[in-house]
Amino acid sequence: MDKEPREYLNVLLIKVRQGDDDSISHLYELMSPTIRYIALKYLKNESEADDLVQDFWYDIKKYANGFLIYKNAYGYLCRVMTRQVLNRLKKLNRQVGNNIAYVDYLKVNNYQTDDSMEVVGLRNDINVAMMKLTDMQRIIIQETYFEDKTIRQIAKDLGISKTQVGRLKNDAIEILKNELNIKGWDKIDI
Image (tube, rainbow, N blue to C red; front, side, top):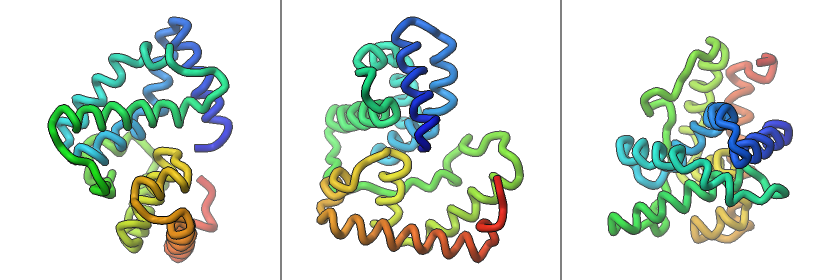
């Protein structure tokens, strides 16, 4: 997520803490796909994930009260959801371990909204390009760009070295760029 939307998320989370209910709607619009992705990633079941996501949004004011103003709201909300998922798995007596999987959003119901045809086409081409990556590369890309995790955090999740994560990430980005260039996305402005 770019710097400007991240700063806007910080403002929204502070406004939620101050009792502005309209800010919850804006926060939901910006963060709901990422929050749902995190739930699906670990639970691997749409109905369980949706239940947990609903609980998350129900408690958003509580989470906003725990937010420190000088922190990153995007990363904070991702960490809160991850903790919620891990706690749910613990209650269900399921192990997480290194069983982290790639979530294909195009196969998840209600993911695509009223986007323009170009955006839908780009999303489809990205999904096709993602399938050219190894499982580890896909997970690294998702954890980097959806969860805002550092290389150190990803290395810990996957049980590999930071150097390996960096190499796999760079290789994955190069593959994605090449695949999207072949489709002509380097010449189109969205």
